[in-house]
Length: 332
Image 1 (cartoon, rainbow, N blue to C red):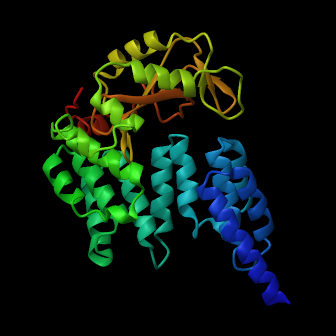
Image 2: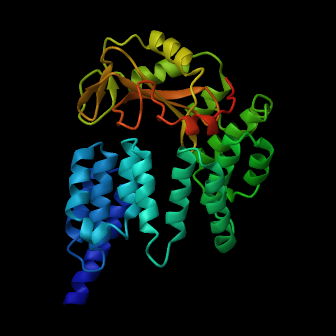
Image 3: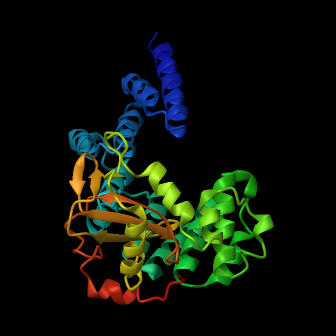
């Protein structure tokens, strides 16, 4: 009977994973609440429940659950603890969590890859590359590893190496939209996107932003996705009265001379205003998270954000050393 019960719980857990992948968080949560009674899938189910809270913007609840289950989860699911710190912009704290987890005798490649993301975000590009090359020695070249190396090459301005690496991606084992976006980004940096636009999916919003110099599609995107019509819990939304066109113009001017943070395939800037501009995680804020195409000033999206104590009023980490490391010139 016990084996039968475990099989049932395994089935429920797998259903939850499918719902989670499709962002059906309500159904996924219901599944994981059941499957956490499994001896085998308990930790994975609890971890998934915490990720759902993070993805849903319930960061306080996520932190509470992480603390509650710390004895069970910490070393096996360190990346979730670090992920929450990343979401809340506590990059150094997140990095220390990752480094602490390597006290365990065996370190999975997934953890090492996630560590490289932190090194990139704090400007330690050489360390990030060493980590990724270490994984490559034992793991050959999975798409995820290749993509990380491509992003690092773009950050460092080595667009030819990024292009050559792109040729090694198995297009059958990568999301079609992600593949097209990455291709468009590499073409953009090599100055051939306009000539090659027939070879990318121009219906994708991201690709369109790279192709067009006007801001019409950005304005439309923000008004549809990030301006409050009716307040929705846990979403990051600008106040209804926001003059989107004026905000875009001011933010473009403000980020022109700022060095970025990085989040995988994007350059990230944080800009603060003297007055409140909207809601983030049910709190009013005067700060905006600005997402641009990696290695460019081309704005893809922006939305209200709550900044942590690691950031100063201009949204940059308070580190002269970091600013020097990021002293690269970015394309407009």
